[in-house]
Image (cartoon, rainbow, N blue to C red; front, side, top):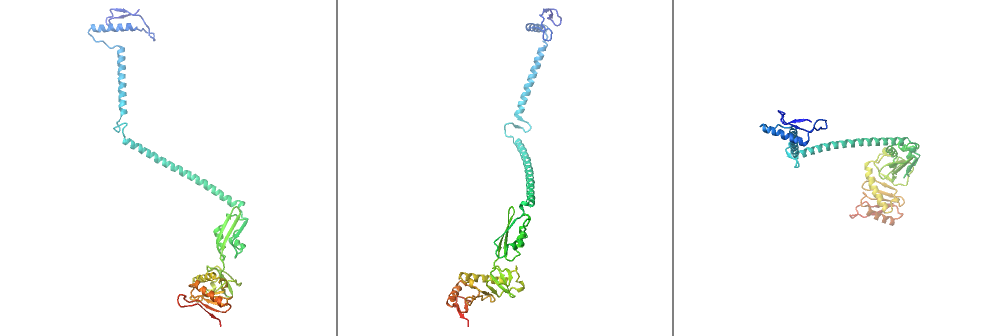
Length: 364
């Protein structure tokens, strides 16, 4: 049995102790023995007028207390830091304008970058789509211009009466067994219009292998005597054809267009075009009266006295400057009925609003 001294300094009074071992194999005091030991030690210091020195447990407790206090202080400090933002000196939970502004700025920068990225993506997609579309178009063009499926097998001409279909097809330059996309429609149309009878041309591709040529022709309305021949002109004054064959058309005398300029495809001069407008008005009034088919010739030599001749009626009618035609035609029709089969001249070349009266003078 070990002996524990009562006086640590003199080790005089010994107290028997029950030996105990701890987990590491050393001697361990019981709780009762430990309390008794501390009481004796304290009594010793008290009797000797000395303060008790700290035991190991006291030191450990004090150390733990300090550490606990330190942790409490750190926690308080952390809580304090959480409550205040010393960088901006603003209480958390209240409106932080600077921080909000910074966040908004960051959002703007992000949005700007995102928009820039989106634009780039859209641009790339557009380029890709364009390249793909271009490739498809090029492929389609190559196929269309090289495939025998699109070789022309039929050329159809529509609305032609004065010019033959073969002539129109020949003028167009379009050939069978040619690729339907190889010819230029504008060029073909202009070539067809070289014929004076052709006013307008419309060319249609009927896939896969047919072409339609639709034409609008000028019609001959009058004829002009030229060096023993006749030149047919349209109502627009275009010279359509020069031939020895005389059609049943009114012959116009007194034009100022030079004979050397009367060529198919040309147009009569401006002064004659003005006279032609008056002639068309006269013919319209005659048609309304049922007399246009009886007109054999028209003389425009005197611009103040246009005259027409009706061979069937054996009469020449003077109409003046072409004014007030509808009223004049009433008098002309009456005289034609009254003086039927009597050769002579009808004078309706005055002003009906004055004292002038339409009259007939028999040929002597």
